[in-house]
Structure formats: structure tokens, C-alpha cells
Image 1 (cartoon, rainbow, N blue to C red):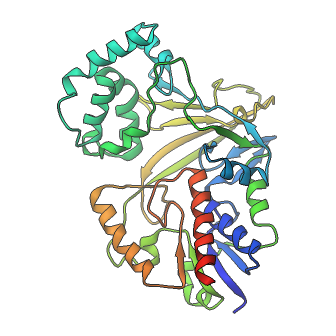
Image 2 (image 1 turned 180 degrees about the vertical axis):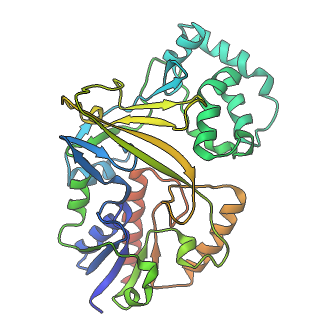
Image 3 (image 1 turned 135 degrees about the vertical axis):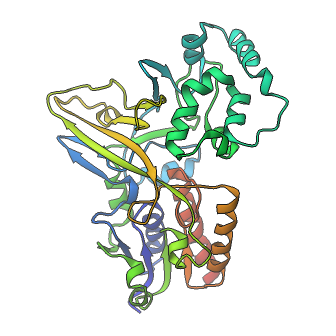
Length: 370
């Protein structure tokens, strides 16, 4: 066989795994069904602006080893993610912090904010949350829930909050300080020049073939390497033998606004009201603090998933997780197969988690060889 590994997917997992294996002297081929490498972190330069084609990507981690690993390939420019939320005509600060509470309730001290939160959430404290709506009411009460959570979340997932699992809301920070930094990680930034140089660094010297759909000719690709590293939807790999897993998809509408130097004064604005169909608008130049006469904005529309669109978010409810475990057991029976990434692991990952997972699985495979 010409290769040790055929790696299906050139996103962060596939590219990182390939890098680790090339460092170990292994022969790798990366194939990808898209016309470009990089998966969802791929950027396109438009009028001097790096446009995140598949949604905003802000790199953040508290793992120094992962931060140093990424900085081998790119220079990271500091960037503090502090999105705004627009509810009809009013802008609020995110994540929930003293700026939010002062604007909504007129409180100016942590004690006042805590007292107000206690009053708002008191009627919901005795019950154990069994869905997202109950969890949100217990965390922040009805006013914040209605204004900043309910409609945004229902647009995002295509279901009423009363039908969504409670754990989805636990990712939102609540702070009694005037701190708009969404992430609490020690290291946070965006690569100078976008994410393409990172992917180029990870895949330097590695064969890549684009516009290739592994699943349509898997017999051929299985003959090209000792191992297959698969990063696509795990249910598709096994021909949906246990049924289809649920995902949510996204549609991105990119617009170049010539002669508009500053559209929304912020990189990311979430739209939490139900009067618009999109969940957020991204203005890409603000990731790089670019001073250009034009700007590029992206409208992000959540949509139902089907096989003609890209899967983005796994729907990790009880039924889907049980079905995924059946597919995971199938992976364990195939010694040639390695899977990883958000779709193959059926797990929501941040970028640093994907890289850490790829490095870990590569190291584990090498150890098992010896």
C-alpha cells in the first residue's frame, strides 16, 4: 500500500492527525469532498478581509501545550470575544454580566444584581430542570430568558425550549463583574492571516486530494492505506445501519458592502428576537481590527439538516446518544478504522478540543504499534 493512513477530511482533526503521523515518519494522504482544505475553519480573503466562510471561529484554550502547538504554525493575534445581543431595537452585553444587568434592571453593584437574580429565579428553584426552559428560568429568571435566550435558542435548534435538553444552557457564563469576555480561558486569539496558514502548516509535505467523496468509492480508498481515519458523519460511514443521527445545519449568506467601512461596530451580534430568521451577523474585519473602505458581513441562518446540506451541530439528546453508542461499538470492531472530530465523535467540540483529541489519538495509535 502506498500510504499508512488515508485521512478523510482536512479539518482540524484530520490535519492535526496527519501532522502527528508525518512527524512519526508515517505516509499520509488527506482526501476531502470540498474544493478546499481546512474544513469549517477555512477562510477566504475578500478585499483584504479574512472571511470566516463557515461561521466565526475564535481560538481559545487554557491548555498551554495546545496554545504552543498552534503557535508553531501561526502568529496569534489577541482577540477578546465579547458579542452583543440585539433584542428588537436594543443591544445588550454578552455574556450575562454587570453590563447586562445594569442595562436591564438598573443595578450597579454585585449585591444588587445577586438580589435581583434571586428574586427572578426564586419561583423555579425547587424543581429539578428536565428541559432547557426550566434550566434557564432557574439560572436567570423569566425576563432574561425571554429577552436573550428563548427565541435565539429556538431558532438555533428548531424546537421549543421546553423540548430541548437542559444541559445546552449550561455553556452560558453568568458573571457579577463588568467583564464582557465570553471565554474564561487563559489564551485567546485569532491567527494573523486567518486559519488557512494553520492548515497549511499542519499539512505541509502531506499529499492532499480535493473534491473526493470517500463514501462513494470507499473500496478504492480502503486499498490505498493500512488505516482509514474518518472525520465525517459516523452514521453515514456505516450506511445508517442503526438509523440516522440528528444534526442541525447552517446556511451562511455573505455580503460584500463596498463603501461601508463599519456596518455594526462589532465582530458578532446575536439576534435574540423572533422578528428575524437569522441568529447572528458577523462582521469579519473586526476580528483583525482591519481599517478598510469596505466590509464583509455574514448572516447565519440555522436550518434543518438533510443529506443535501452540511451537518454542523449534533443533537445530543437521549435517543441520539444511544444510537451513536451503537455506531461507536462498530468502530471498536474494526482495527483499521480511526475516527475523530465533531461529526465522527458526535460531540460538540471547540477547536482546541479537536486538536487535543487528534494528538491524543495519534499518540495512542503509535503506542499501540510498539
